[in-house]
Length: 65
Picture (cartoon, rainbow, N blue to C red):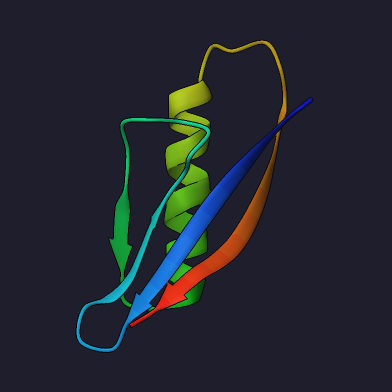
């Protein structure tokens, strides 16, 4: 099982963003951390769709601006 790290960043003016150093080509924006986690998990699963392996998604708050 591969581990996919999702890095979340909070900006007081722009809300939350997330991307991953393990999967290139996607990022999300959200109004809350909970929504950021949900959208990030959807993006990871969509990118891995068709991949036979299961992924463990770990969430990390990488910055706060």
